[in-house]
Amino acid sequence: MHSQLGTGDTERVFGMSQIASRIEALTGHRPSRSALWRWHLKGRLSSRRIGGRLYATEAAIRAMLDADECRNRGSVESRGKEAAARLLARVGEQDDRSEVA
Image (tube, rainbow, N blue to C red; front, side, top):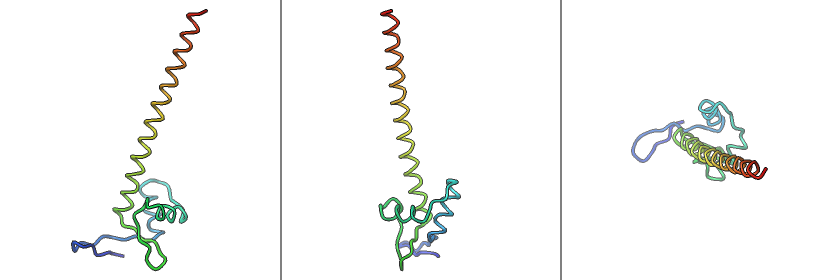
């Protein structure tokens, strides 16, 4: 299905099974239909409901995946920093104990 955008361009629109297939092709993981609906309802996936069916563009799918990647990268980095701080604190405690003994 093609959608006419305001500029006269056409953009490919995917149905639910096609959305799941595109996400699987891009990430290696196929989301369930309920996950797609949940993402739609929470506004995470920019999509439209037409006649009870869910549709999204390639750009919307990629935007969601890019946002997830940025969110995940930030949380991994912060967890790494927290783990490093805990490790340094433990090393400092061990040094304090060795000086007392």
